[in-house]
Length: 496
Image (cartoon, rainbow, N blue to C red; front, side):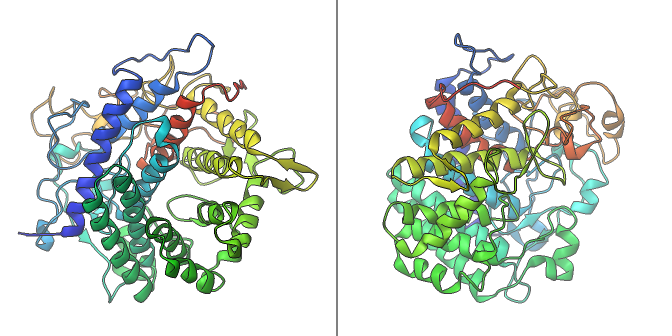
């Protein structure tokens, strides 16, 4: 069976990241240590939360598990992935509570883990990982079953982008992930691997830019990706986002020129106040503004202005139109899986604060001027809410807190482990466990669920996937956020 070079790049980076971060985070807070504890000063134990946040990824692993696997209830799975297409796609990570490997959100997960290390690596362990453009598994058939990944018997269809059916957002995010990862490996002294990642990042970007198109526009790819991961915001932001990461990774002026020449036509001036697996605008503005703030590229001033505009929407005291907050103080955006917004926006707040703190720049929000300390305090309110300072008085991270979600929407966590129940369980055999009101038998420690709604209420119901399902792209930016507060725990403590 043929092997995919990009896939093996993906798997090596993923495993190195997980192993490196797990060992280093463990030095900050020995595993296991839940239920959580407050420090003597009354602060949350951010080191413990960081360790668990990273441990979560072990429960999402696909393929043959390493000897160091700590989520002992998991077993090998997906060993023949890619066989239907004649390629070896074993390995990688399941993106959420199902048994499918979606390339687009996993590439974003990789980018955010790399960015977390780049900005806050001094406060935590270091390393990186990534995931490629292929999606593995038939999402419709998978979602008709409730079975653990070790027993998967649904069709493992491979969907991939080509010159004839492009997916610039997938290829662009893959390029961003590889470029960001290359910076991490270069800093760690692995120059050869960094060069390999960077070379493949350039190839992925070239593919994305040359064969422009959204995967959601192709009938076959749309049928596989939607409604799970439809591309609602187009591919243009991923082209600029990947160019920005290639600029940072290589220092090559041609990528800066690409952003300048193509920015307007690719929607850089849209100033969309979103950041997540589908929309990179706010993250792009923060990332690119660094060169202006540092005085390296004064031509990038408009990106700093757009980043300021976004930040002002997060400051309740400003005169700008505001993002919605719940009565308890949580950032809220409609659509479900709200903690993805909490963690990604908190990451941008801390990153922008870092950039501003190294200059004389501030953020002008109408009648008030906002500095780095205000941004850090806003981020801390969000992470403390997630960890338990909220109206429900519960943590939304499994394993952290006296109260945390017990019935998360996750197949492997909710069905008896292959270690305790070695007999095979077919497609529908897990349904009674899905319907059960009992806690999940296998705690997916470190998993952050979608979280409460706009009223701060959380019912802890397995069927309510919008609130109870964890995802890799919720946890990835949280790694950087928690790392910052491990190194800077006294930013301020707020209770709601």
